[in-house]
Image (spheres, rainbow, N blue to C red):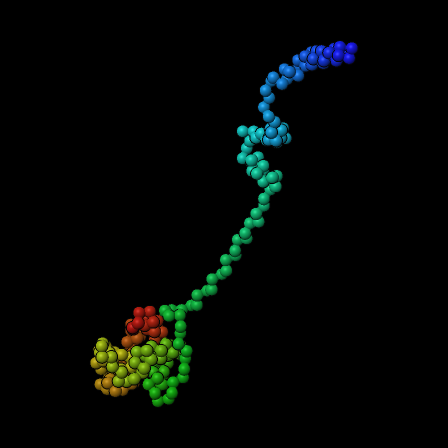
Length: 202
């Protein structure tokens, strides 16, 4: 009797397995499904962003900056500094100072002649600077390359003969001729000095 019961139990088990539930399980196993990976299971969590193709550049810039606006402080325009005023000058920009000449010297003779012509101390100062440059106030100063001679460096020296026969040795004769030359050609000793400073000769 026990054998009969075991046989009925085995038949019932087979029938239950092959029944509607068993058929569903069999069909489910028959369908092949792709294996589920970690990547595939996380696809649902991916965030997407759609950008309107017609969005303006300003919108794109705002998006790029994360909603922040950038402010750049402009550099201040430098204030130009005034240029120093040019010193009034005629020629070199430097006027020689007046120095009282030693009595009895060639410069003392020239000073009296300058004042006699109505020129002032400033003109005498220009004359001193001019003839310091030309001859050092030496009566016998001679330029071998040009032939100029004397305190005013007359070229040739014999021109000073119009002021006196002692033109070779007398400072008063040379100075008288030199002042006449300066007056006729440059107007004043400062005019001659400025010309000399500009071109190197007078």
